[in-house]
Length: 93
Image (tube, rainbow, N blue to C red):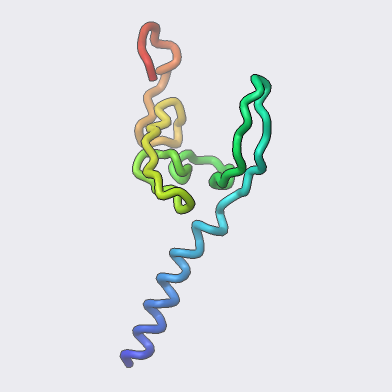
């Protein structure tokens, strides 16, 4: 019984650890138009939401360990969405 519970728990944990790795895309290094070189890096796969982006508030980048701090207030898929922020004059977003 204990062995079965242990194996089930281990399998479940491995699935949750492995799933984020499969949703990553490796971006090769490139030069921007202003001449700045951007190093090779990982990003989350493009989709319809910003909530799974590494830089989204509270998310942790599994490759760097950095905690996201971007609220994405201009994106309707963000829980911090504030419509028409870009139309407000004199306000930073």
